[in-house]
Amino acid sequence: MSVLALVLMGLAVGAFLLRWYQRTEDRPGLLFSWAVTLATALFVVFVVGPVIARFDWTAAFLGVPLAAFAGWVMAVVWAPRLVEWLGRKSTDVIFGAETPPEPKPCYSVAEAHRKAGRYTAAIAEVRKQLEQFPNDFAGWMLLAEIHADNLHDMDGATAAVEQLVGQPGHAPKNVAYALTCLADWQLKYLRDLEMAKGTFQRIVDMFPDSPEAHFALQRIAHLSYRSVGRDGTPPPPIHVPSTDGRLGLKTDSTEYGPVAPDSAAKAAELVEQLEKHPYDNQTREDLAVLYAESFGRVDLAAEQLEQLIAQEHVSDKQVVRWLNLLADLQATRGGDLAAAREALQRIIDRFPGSPAAEQAHRRLATLSLELRGRQTKPSVPLPSPPEMPGHGNEP
Image (cartoon, rainbow, N blue to C red; front, side, top):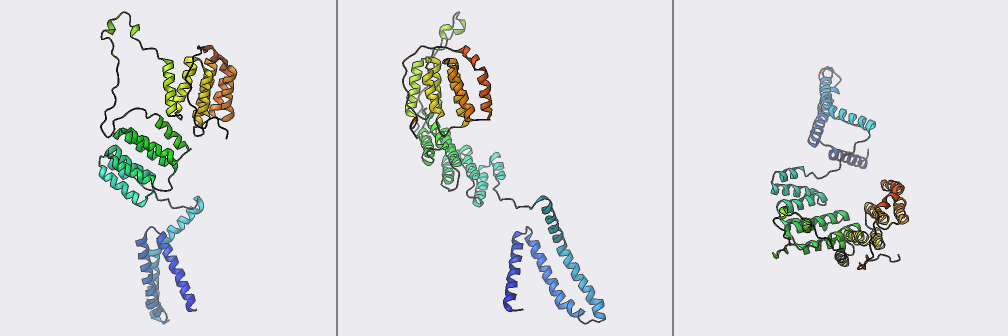
């Protein structure tokens, strides 16, 4: 056999042993088995072999027992491993090959420390896991939550969220969720409205024309209250109307009832809000209901609802709710049974086979009964709200 063949054979055996060592779970035990095997092989070659080679009584009465002893040692060392290997292969044939589980971070110890109030130990445990899994979303969020909710350390929470946002590969919804949590903490603990608004605006800038941006715009639209900022500016006082302290002794308490709402003023307030935040879905829906119920202007209500329905990044559940609301207003406020049927038919056509479509089918059969509650309101000049940017434009 040539030297090259011996070298190649040695490399092949070495590669096989290395792969075996890397894949085994009991590495110290495998090294011990190899050492015993090597010692037994040397014993057979240099001790048992020369004795048996004599072919005399010594070989018969000494060499054979020594060879049997060497075989017994090899059986003791390798029989358990051989049985385990055969059993695993048999199991793989019956139940399928076993794939090693994917390593995942474990935060149970950190959660236990957190529940026990040991926040420093919890942070240390989370960071230990993040050293092995530096891009784990759940780990960074847990670290930020401990800093914000338990330690009220907004600098630490902000640093954890910024570290997460700066990592590549995270899904947009995860990044948006992290920034949303940060904005909520800024409102809850810092009571800083402008800082929270800037955090929501980052979502809009990072993921324009996306569901995440759409949700962030909804949150921005409802940050209308004034909070206490870092400068310590107090919030404006809330006016509480005073009432007669002897109200229970009055014979006629109707004069102390709630003041009738000013529908025109409410409409102007909603229009003003939409001028500032044209993507405010809740305000636009409230305005549509006000147009129909207080002023009898179902046409203006339908216009507002159509703008909501035409949006790209709204859920199917919201679209179904708006179409049902449109059918309600057309039937009970406008008395237009055909328009109400058309709105319900749009649900059936847009979401065929869905529970919403089945419900629309049932409503079509009983829609005429809803006309009994129709109310007519006089026509009143109303302020015109702005349309959503891009609504009605040709694609």
